Image (cartoon, rainbow, N blue to C red):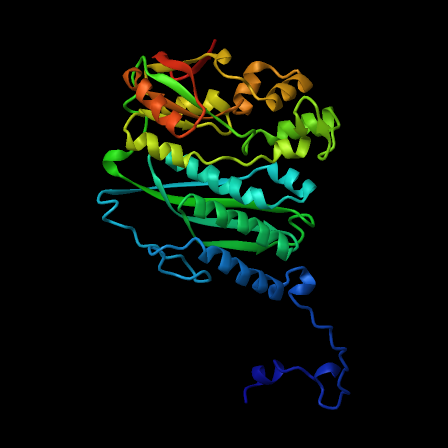
Length: 371
């Protein structure tokens, strides 16, 4: 063996590696599970089984998969949609959830979520097909999750929409105990020649407003500040100006306009429709107005609900700020050609749908002017 090889060897093994050294005794560490980190998989599985039952109640013959797969399967009805265009939307409930946590009311927020998403695609002429939900929480509370999904399931059935999948995520340390976040995605379809974009809107068309149920799912950060911090109301406190308890006024469900929209689109009387959500009439109506046009809205044409009036009084909120933050009692605006207004009003009257003419389309630069 060459000398350089011998010199490269260690002179002796260190004590820890010597065959004669006494072996060290190691203490066995305690076993740590996922549950110790705050995620209860077993509880989560029990909850998922109950959620499956709720979702199945929304299924129709187009649903080809069970809840629990890696993806939901849905067969598009090509007889109903021979020239199909898919329409999608994703949204959440926002800080309305804070009021739900405070009151322990979790059933209606699922309805809020579905109805909001349904309206967003219905104003483009789309029929809802299926829905996916996402619920993330710190520590999973089985009954709370089930109650939320029950609301989602009921709203899906009411809107003819299948709940084909979703995700319930346990994220301890990210959300506080008893808190969760909620979001959803909806997919709908419309035949290409029935898409409503607002491209056919013309100067002189009439703006017809349909009432909201309340705040719906927008403006809650300001509303909570004014009611709970400025006025220092409790959520269970009856307020004369609201003619209701504070929490009840805030938790009124975001209504679905799908039924009335179907009647109007079937009669082919609408040139465009705007769902009035975050940004109010000020920011949402211009989204459908063609270039070179604007809208004039008459603020005296409808009665603003007491909730909005009281919020404005509490914070001395500027009118422009109110119109950009809240729906102010108008949840949907339909743009109707002047010659079809009479027909449209007859359709709405037969449907017992309250409505009012709130303005007109004029020449302008895609913005709303208030009178």
